[in-house]
Length: 105
Image (cartoon, rainbow, N blue to C red):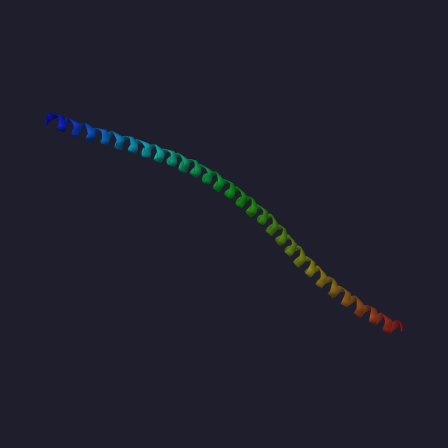
């Protein structure tokens, strides 16, 4: 009877050892997966940094374009004002020429 208990205890201990080995194996797999996740996280962070850099480059380029467009708009507004002033002066000169032509006439 003592032997049967001993054998039963040995079988139980053997099964527990088998389970421990399986748990160790599964634990190793989880550690490997965890390492892969950490590596992927590092890659995603690096990718995010590159995207942020490219986005900043795009915004900087757009800022330059906007400044050029604003300068062109200011130049156009100034030119329109100058054109109107010259048109008024030309109209005045045309009137004077017509008066002179009438007098010379």
